[in-house]
Length: 354
Image (tube, rainbow, N blue to C red):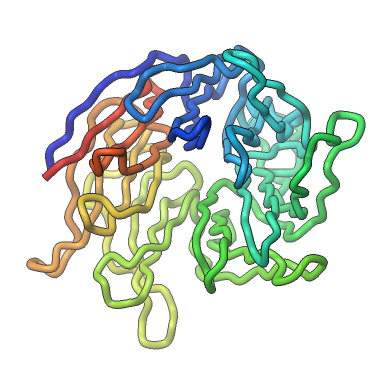
């Protein structure tokens, strides 16, 4: 694996990344965890616009399907100890460097969310990291997941008229991990917390109930599902525990249970606060990209090596403290990554070749 790196911006505490289809082009949003800007980039890394300068506190962003540049974002989640005012906002382009930001819904401690399509309806699933605290690092109050059908026209929602959400599941301690997946032919969410890993299926028809199924009871900060070895069964990759230092892959046994298959063998003192995670096909192979924010602060790619019958790892970058990463294939057909290297305030574009 050959990695070519290009630094495209220096953004203090850069954190959240999202792809955005805008004006017929693939673009990317990168926003900050603290009170800092959100920038729009081209797929080649050119900074196109400043979407906002504040307030920041952005954990997640996602384009509303079928729109030209309209997206949702979390605002004012500055840390697990400073997020009671957190909300989801709707952001709409008006002109260059002029984007309208309106409150869609207020969800205290909302950390991750996704827009899931099923049966022609878009659904919002919002995940609150916790439900309260009385002092710093107080984790006695479990988080929850909330859902709602997302109308095609959301222009009427604002602070005075927020989107109404229903409780889908509660009692989810350290409700941190979220990945959008395909499940049963439709969009679903893979949600990870202290109680394990769950699949959330949106209602089969408008007005029906969400379906929630647990696939693992292992505490997880983030989880992915990917068929590494091509046997038709999805492996489960888990970062454990919350903001943890353990990277483990589980394989389905003959009884349909996930059992440990592989663990990254670096000393856990070197892999503190594993955080960046992205499952994709990279250079034609199922790949799990993982990065950590403390210790050696590296970013690696994990793949299955059929010749050795084991997993292998390769470095994407070192000593950068990546918080989040996104993979895409550019117009030239090249594998690209965007990394929010939070610990060095660096937004990086990587070209990956054989």
